Image (tube, rainbow, N blue to C red; front, top):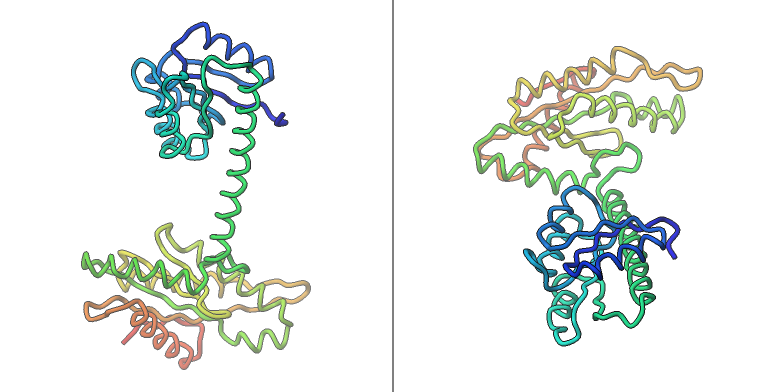
Length: 305
């Protein structure tokens, strides 16, 4: 038996059977709600998250298949067990094939142990599917995220950025991009060690994210270089954002052990033009503006010319 109680919803219009199911499953330590028809069952789904739903096929209001579909819309990992009479198994089989039901049980039950075993196996499958779902989300996050900074990695940035670029071009909306790079990064690493490089990059990513909006994209472009894509942003506004990032970092040194490391950055800003055909064009122009910032001594922000 699963360690934690199972949250169960029973939808059955036969009152005596419904009460029997409630008494039996409750006696096993599970949390059980019961309703007399499909319409009430669908309404109950909006207020409570159930692990397992046991539903009759033929009921007043919504039938069992409709309850199944509604349950999967609320939570696709909810397991559904269908109750059906022996003469008509076609609907139960359809629930398995098309609706992702866990199993069906033919009424009348040969014994309640079949019900117990089916409900508990269904709950175990829900737990397993939740674990797989979490693992898949974590693998997806790892595939798109830079492990050091939590920013988008380069591949993910360009994948999402190209979509945003296409949307802005389609609707003729402004789109700006800033490329940010740490000044004298290699010299700092040589002087203070490789750990200082990781600390600086992490701090830079943190400051950038603090200045960005939810809809902005931040990616680690290369080593200590980041790209920031800002939808619906005019060039002057993007310039001010980049200047704020520069000012925050210039305003306080990074402390690592007994060392105080001055962190200065340079940035280049570019805006989408109607002649642009891809995000890469925008990135290249921002990169040229960044090089001009470096050539002028660093610790400054430049806009494309």
